[in-house]
Every structure is written in structure tokens, then in C-alpha cells.
Image (cartoon, rainbow, N blue to C red; front, side, top):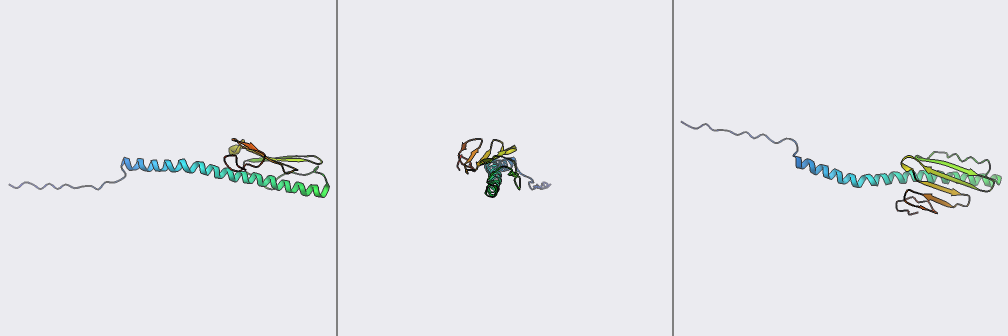
Length: 140
């Protein structure tokens, strides 16, 4: 009597192994750890550019007002386009003015100021100075 031949059928493996899944998760974690802080810095620089641009635009209008009237009294400091995450305010009298952009939300702790003498000051969560700090590290 002949022995029956047993055929083994091999099913092909489907899906991912746990090791493969863990490698993918590790790669995504490393990329996220690098990309997210860079993206936040990128957004902050954009918000800062908007704020300093609005302050500069208001300063130009203030100087035009003064050239026409020889006073800053009556000058409107409303920005033509409100910068995102910043509130712009100003004070003015006969011969002086101060224009400020103060951060809110994700830009809380940031402040940019300019006056009639073109003296610029800024404050960030990590530094302050007699210039407009627009990059990390307190660099003007």
C-alpha cells in the first residue's frame, strides 16, 4: 500500500509585520520632530513680516500727514490690512507718535514699536532690543 502524498499549501503572507510597522512609525516620528518646529518658525516669521509691514505702512502715512499739516494730531493709525495675530495701536500728539504691533494668540509675547525718529524696538519671548527682531536667536 502506497502512502498518500501530503501536499502542503503555502499561503502568501499578507499585511505588515510588527517590525515593519515600528520602523515606519520611528521614521515618521523623526521627521515630525524636525519638521514641526521648522514649520512653526516659518509661520512666526510670516506673522512678524505682516506686523512690521503694517507698522511701516502706518509710519509712512503718519509722515505724509505731518508733511501736509505740520502736526500728527488727527492722524488715523488704522492699518489698511490688519496683520494676523497682531493688534496695531498708535498714539500721536503735535510732534511725536508711537506705533505698536502687539502679538496675540500664537504670537503672544511679541511686540514691535516705531516712533517719529524711526527708533525701532521689539520684544520677543526670548529677547528684546533696539531693532526689529525677526528671526530666532534675537538677531535683528
